Length: 262
Image 1 (cartoon, rainbow, N blue to C red):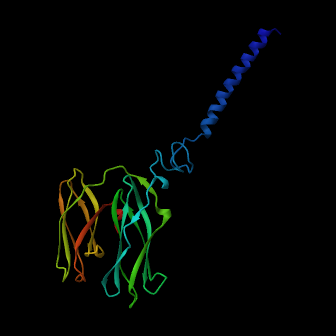
Image 2 (image 1 turned 180 degrees about the horizontal axis):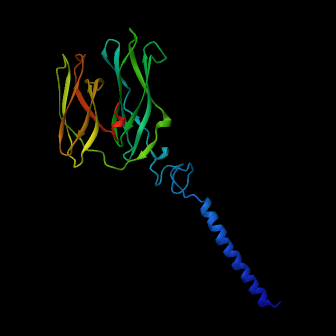
């Protein structure tokens, strides 16, 4: 067999081998290959962590700033043995939100290292804003006087999601507090100056003394507020204030849908 015949034989074998690779290898590759996704439980593609960061909807924990509790939660007395508790929380992540951040509020009295009451719930954390965690009313045993509260997050529930949409620009106009010595009432106008209809609007009012301490809070809800319209929000309390009000604030939060209403 001359050299040309051997060379031709090698070429034919190489072609046959290449065809076999194409016919067998390519289908096998596509049979087992799985393109990277944000739900495959692995860090791949442009992800910064497992199924988070990059083009994924979820933010990695390292990409987000922690929630900031603004001062100690305040325990508010409504009636004998009946109380509420409120904490103001800041989310400094302008493009990050949490749909359901689980929390535990532990209520203590002066003489106990064990909570006299434990309250659990969840909160919608809107991007780049301050919101209220507000629980109550709740009843304690006769004679129990709570003096402090601690807010703890359920870390496993802090799932950050991207939300680059601008926050709804609702305005609070002409807040007026009256009847402080009888049955307090706070009234304000909520205005929607945008071109979009808004719905599921949560409103929390807080009243502070001259030292900036919150001593009263109340909440209400606006089901819908069409573009360019206004609505009057009214907050009331069942008994006179026990100190002079020096300031009021109405915290606005727009829920993604009605399932967040509590």
